[in-house]
Image (cartoon, rainbow, N blue to C red):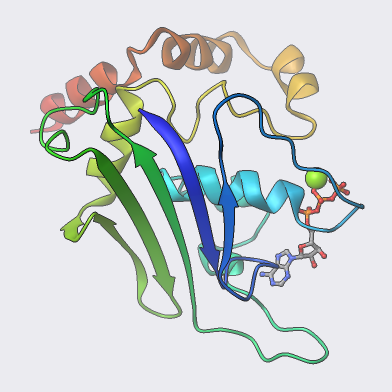
Length: 183
Ligand code: ATP
Ligand code: MG
């Protein structure tokens, strides 16, 4: 599975629809302080099912919606679409029928989040599982936030173990076991 495009609409500072094309090889994003570089990485994490407002540098999940600026009113929803090239058919069962996957998450004020894979409505858990099994989840060590290295060094053994488990690709397994034990 290869990320090919990220589209943001009303997400944080990206009020108008904005496409980030992710080409083969390395993609660099450069720009002055406050231009939205970290917001792009947060959008990627968010569309993969991140549900902790702190990971989005906000107090509540609705804080990802464009809050308005001097010349523009606030928006009522935020949407991020992640396009995935599934040409090698490596997506988990249930999502593996198509060459291209488009995962969409939309949050609407006072309503909450809704997810889609291509045109099908899915649950947050389905999207989280899709990425957990591919070792690229919202908590993946492949996504390194500003300041995260220092956090990692200072973290407790349990938190550090979770990071290693995600890197090893077994966190989806643990999540399923936990859910099975609750049933
Ligand atoms: P740095 O180089 O300092 O790390 P950066 O390019 O990573 O900067 P970001 O932190 O991604 O910048 O962007 C911060 C900008 O996003 C700020 O201007 C902030 O006001 C804006 N912003 C964050 N949330 C929202 C929101 N909900 N609505 C509108 N603007 C927002
Ligand atoms: Mg930043």
